[in-house]
Image (tube, rainbow, N blue to C red):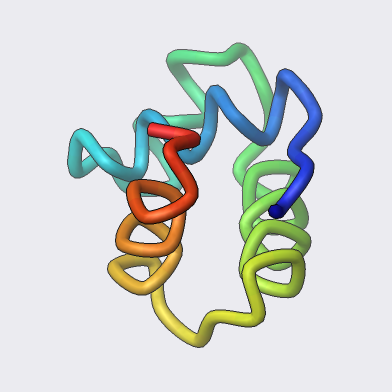
Length: 64
């Protein structure tokens, strides 16, 4: 089971809704570079290479 911080979970939810990095940054009041850093951490945690794979694994693990 993958453990996400509240911030990472919020980003995964926005990714699942189709939000892109600039949209996520604006929504969460973060810099785009910070969102990119979070996205990389999320990909690493899920051992995924794409956002779609992250969403699929998050659904399988009942995170989403």
